Image (cartoon, rainbow, N blue to C red):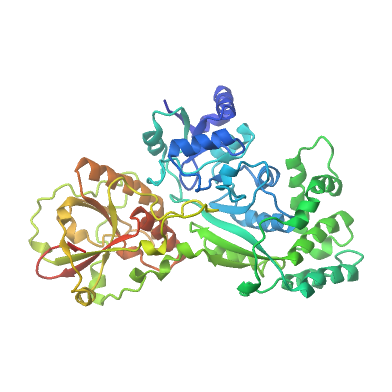
Length: 563
C-alpha cells in the first residue's frame, strides 16, 4: 500500500531517512516532488529497480528515463561518459540552468543499465530544483531515475494525491511537497558531435599547440579555437559520433590524471575530485589568469583538443520552460561555445501545423477574450458550470465542427528514442480527447464538400483556456475555464502551464462521472509561435493525440459537425 509523507520530514526524521535508504537498496520505488511534475523514482544504476519502474508504469522499454542527481559532479562520476570539452559544455549549462528544468542527454557510462537509455547508450540527466528531492538523492547515494509518476501515456501528476491515485496499491513511499511550481516536464536537449572530414581542420590543433609550447598564454589563441569546427549546415560532411575512440583511449587514465592536476588526496572521493574542475573551468573565462599554471593548462589542452576533433551541436528534443533562445543565448557568452548551434527536433516543430496559419477576422477575435474574474489557484474548479439547462436565448450562434487528425506530424514511435515524451499519445485522459479550434465561415465553406456528421456538444466536457467559448458554456455537458484575465500578459502562460494538468485531471473525472463522449480542449488563445506557448501546446497536442475539431460560429443556431 502506498504511503504519503510530508517531504520536510526527510531532513529531521532519522527513521524515515533509514527507511528510504533501505527501500531504494531493495530496488523499491518512491514518489518524489520536483518543480516540473512528480516523479516515480528508483535507483538509476540498478536494472531491477528500472524494470520495476517500467512495470509499474506499463511503460515500453523504447522510452528512456531521465536520471536526477544532486549536482553536476555526481553526473560526471556516475552517469556521463564524456570527454573534457563535453564536460565543459555541460558545466556551463549547469551554471545557468541547474538546479532546474533542463535535462541534458550525453553518452552514458558502460556500467549504466542499457534499459535506462532505451538501449541507445545515451542518458538524460538533470538536477531538480527541489531541496527535498536533492536530499533524497544524497541519502540514497545514487542517481534517481524518475519518469512522471503516472501510468504510461496518462496525465502527468502535479501533486502527491495524483501519484497516490495512480499507485495506491503499490509498495511506494510518496513524499509530499505541494503543487509543482512549473507544471510540465523539463526541456530536454542532446549534445551531439560529428566527425570532421576536413583533415586540414584536424591538423590545426596540432600546429597551434606547437606554436604555444609554453602553455595557453595567448588569449587570441583561445578565442581562435572558436572557429575550428566545420559549419553545421554541411550535412553531407557530418557523421554522428556514437563511440569517441579518442576518448576511449584516454578514459582509464582520466581520473588518475585529474587527481594529480587537482592535487587531490587519495582519501578524496571521485566526486570531490570532479568538484575541483569548477575553478579550472571558470578560469577559461579569464585566460590570462591561468597562463602560468601548468596543471590548469593540462585541462585547457584537453578541452581544446576535443573541441578541435569534432563538430558539436545541440538539439532540443522536448520543449519546456527553457527555450532554444535561452540555450543559445548562454552559449553565445562563451568563446569556446558560441559556435555550437542549437536546433529543434523535427517531431516537435508544431509551429508548422496548419492550425497556426488560420486567419481570423477582428470580429471573431472579440469573442475569444476571457471576461470573468475567477482566478483563485486554490479553488480552481469553482468556475465549472453545473447548470446545463440555462436559458440559451443569448447564445443563438451556429457552431459547425469538423474533425481532423494531425497525427502525421508525429506518428507512433518506431524505434528507441534518446528522449522520453515523444509518442503522439502522451499526457492523455482515459476519455477520448480533441483539440478545439475556431475557424472562419470562409474556411468552412472551402471544405463544404467534406462529409460531416452531427456532433452533440451536450455530451462533451469543454476545458477552455482564457474563456474563448465562455458565452457558450451551457452548450456543453460541463464547462471548465482556465481563466487568467486578471494576470499580466507575461504571467498568463506561466499560470496556464502550472495549472493545465490539474484542470485536465478534473475534466477527466467529470467526463467519467457523467459518461461524456469526449473531452474538448480549446486552443484558440494559445496558438502563438512563441516558445513558451509551444511548450504547453506540445502537451495539449499529445493529450489529444493530434485530433482536432474546428468550430465555426454564426448568428443563427448552434450545431456541431464532425467529419
